[in-house]
Length: 116
Image (cartoon, rainbow, N blue to C red; front, side, top):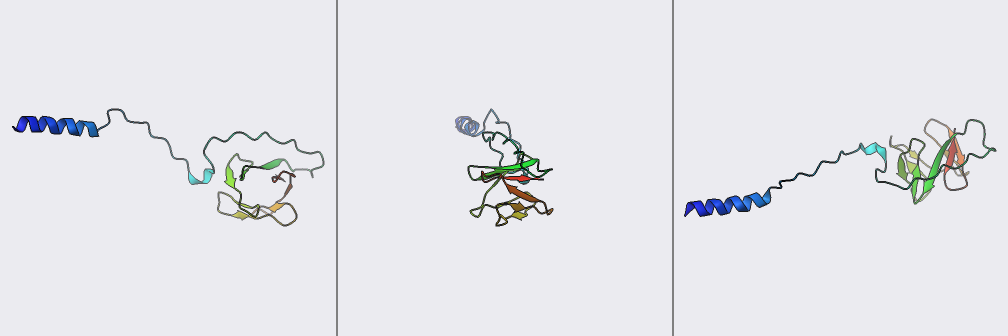
């Protein structure tokens, strides 16, 4: 009587154990921004009228800013955003932003910014 109970228990328990393990996905650091696949934003041509040295571009698309390093951050309702260091970058009221290092970025006329 014990053998059928042991066999039955073995069958039940074997159903609880997966014979195929799914590969674990690496977890990115929290400061990378959006890690889902996002359709690439084509780089905007840098207008000739920009001040010298304004070669970095922060683009805006679908409620998110794509920073020059490729990371993305959500835009807040006021048009600012928070970078990976935790610093909040608000709009400056004149169409641009001022970065924590003091650099002023100017509007690209598409809700993004050109920065030095």
